[in-house]
Length: 316
Ligand code: SF4
Image 1 (cartoon, helix red, strand yellow):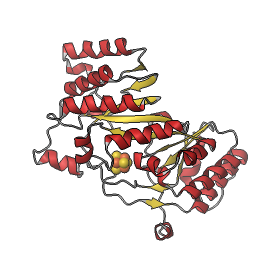
Image 2 (cartoon, rainbow, N blue to C red):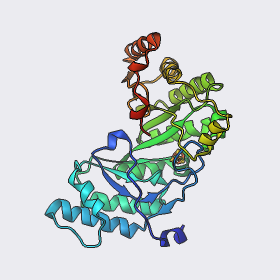
Image 3 (cartoon, rainbow, N blue to C red):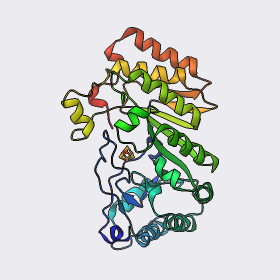
Image 4 (cartoon, protein in one colour):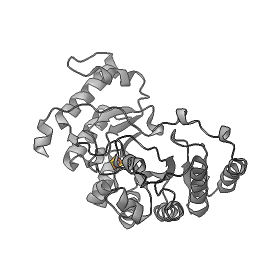
């Protein structure tokens, strides 16, 4: 780990959940510690850890700029660019799974952030199930006390066969354990699943198993994304070689419908607002279940492609 820190840290591009659009983006790491997911653009990337003193220097510079409009020399211009449109309330820790940052350093960075910005409402981060499982409930509680209060976690699928195939590195039981652990510590969970990840042959099982895992975790937020094959990734190659058969856009809506029908939540904000989806729907489940299913049925019964987000407007 220490050898990695000695290497020059390059600030990662901003890749964040839609709800963090107004946050300040503070990198602790770049890349992702679980770089084996065969569908992901970070496949094979190298995890880099940022020196915690560098993180603190950035927090100092941000504080000087926000309070006094003063720019500190030798600080990346992006800091000021992000600060100019920051809402001052939320911070999002970069990168693919900033919670992998060594625990004492994570605590030090969060403490410093809280010291310099005592009025922050919330700090968020991507966290893999492995990152959560690595920490005790007390450690997670400590993070929550320091306002790291929302984890964005990719469940992708609840189907163990799919999870194994895509190299997620955990099975569905570990996924459930991680989700429950974060909840026990009082951390809000925003989970994402990927429509189409089981391909044509695995579609039904992918839906039913994913609904099972989502229901078992019972998160505050859940979002569906639609599989987008990224050139160069192993899954893209499988598709090129004819061994992975992607579902159609309307089949992705069938999967979305199946997920909503088969999930059981206490109170979950469920959406397909992500730009990768062919149709955006959202609502609170179970309250809005009927309305959301009707919206989907209306589009599915017409099978009119003009009702779908066009391919060129889809994003990752
Ligand atoms: S854990 Fe997430 S960010 Fe990391 S490779 Fe897998 S999908 Fe990508």
